[in-house]
Image (cartoon, rainbow, N blue to C red; front, side, top):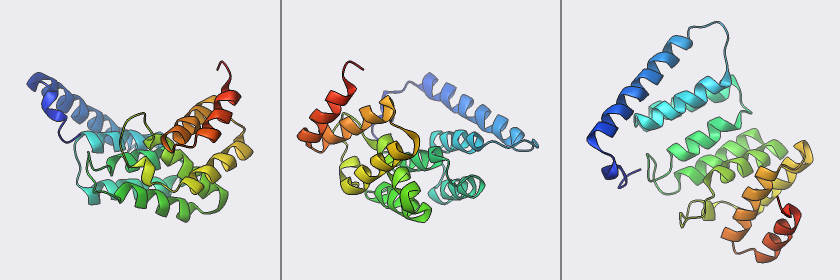
Length: 182
């Protein structure tokens, strides 16, 4: 991210640039194959981040990905990350993208997507992006996710961290109790 890149050595940057270019080359060759996979787009989004693509180009890629498989949540999480101010976006871009994407998918699936995007943004750090997400929508998405697919320990842990970051201590306590020794 901006401000952190100065800790990478010159040889480290050279290797990163070479490997990212090779990944892009392989992906471009694979795009000609008959068989298609949604993960191709997610990996290409990682290349876009590594190569600091311009926003219109990265947005076009995510729009192509969504057209290919609208419910593949990795696209949305990856683009939300791309839009963070430390990478290529401005303050508020990530939150706006999350809201628009969830609204476009609509209903419980949209709420689930909103939770999944938030899950990719929550951290045990002081990054304010997660705190600007709609907490009621995150909660609604978590509940819808559990209802649709069953509860996973990964999502439970993420939701617990979210509750802690939001100073929702009563909720966090009940979630810690659900986790038990897990």
